[in-house]
Length: 133
Image (cartoon, rainbow, N blue to C red; front, side):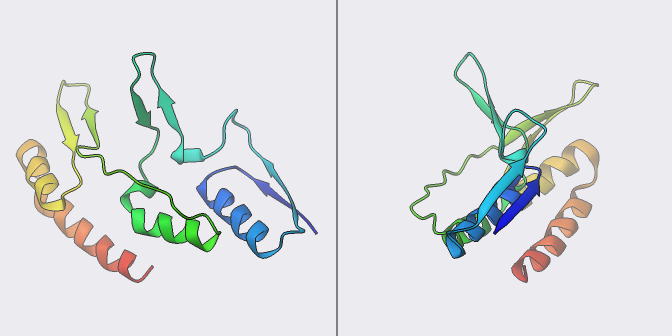
């Protein structure tokens, strides 16, 4: 059987891993417009030796990532916690540091923008949704 995917983001890579694990004879072709795969899982390396993720979407759910990898037969992956995650720089010179702790992040957002309660409520709602994911 031959299967083609368009786009080589995390969803496609996961689907391809699952298909090849469950159906070893399947022939998969992935079409990607970029010169790299991984979509938002990709990182950029700097000459100074630093590295930054292009998009932290999946790293906010490390348990889900490990579960998906294990389902595809990939085990022994070691994830390292990074905190703080990154700094957000705004045109007016404001800098907000993204941290993993929801309460600490809400406090920082409240201090900077007066929207900490809204952020906290949003994250609480998303936590409920992800628990059922």
